[in-house]
Picture (cartoon, rainbow, N blue to C red):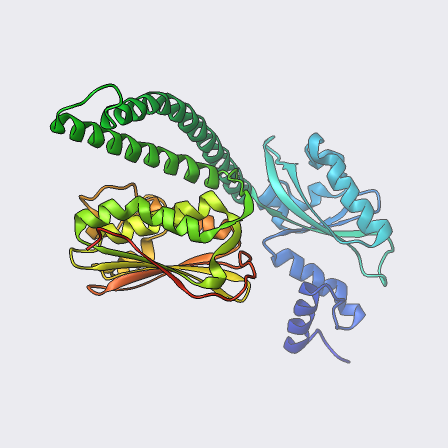
Length: 406
């Protein structure tokens, strides 16, 4: 007569059990096998009648609940489950017993010393060849998981609260700063234009410097606000049909004086098919101004900066190429994150938001911004806006040089 299960049968039965299948061992030895397996398992294994009453509990009851396995026999979920979680456990048992649906529920079970411990119960109906309607439950402690989850939720809430506070602070500060800045810019412009009488050349120069500095500060405030809106998911695109040619020229004019002072040649080349575009006009101009400003800032005297606009299928491709100092591979990995700057940028004006804004605004258009650079040779930044192209008749390429640039 055949004895107990062979090693092969034990392994096959264990694997089958984990997969939710009935063990492939002779029925006479099945109950004894599973009882032995249950006694060795670190998780609590219990068998329940359809009403939830326990008919068997494994040895893990002592470790998990401080109760002897025999002491659990005859108890119902009402005796072991925290009142606030009882309905969830009863629903899982009912689904398993009457509908054959496996259930997983997280609930607090009562330890013998009165503590409520978070446990995960996995319930399923017992094999059909055994007592019908019975439920087998596997229970394990998840207190560490719950604590970690609670800590993550708390961290998330704190981060969201900090973001809201930052947004409120920036909105308040922007109003407080813009009010005096508008006055500074307005009155300095009146003085620079000598609208109410002549000024000495030096005072006129000072008025121009005040206006330039005020405009620079206003631009930094706007960059901070835009990045804050993007991070909060509240930056809205206002897409429209506009003359990309005019926006390119305007962006180039914005940095033309800085290029002239630095001895950097500045040129813009707009392909005929790219004269018009459909996108957020202000965002496109801001991207171009940021890219051109960075290129001029990091290009030494005698170098050049070139802006091109072209069409690739349905996409508008904007590219800014400079012959500047280039970017190292280590810096390339960091660039594009807010407030990140290259080692070479230390001592130069800027917040480190320019490229981050370009990448974020390109992404809002469904596109991307890519950087290619060789240290000591120069950098190319390419912005691709995949849905911005507008069909136009063929025409000659328009090259716009800027007078006064080196």
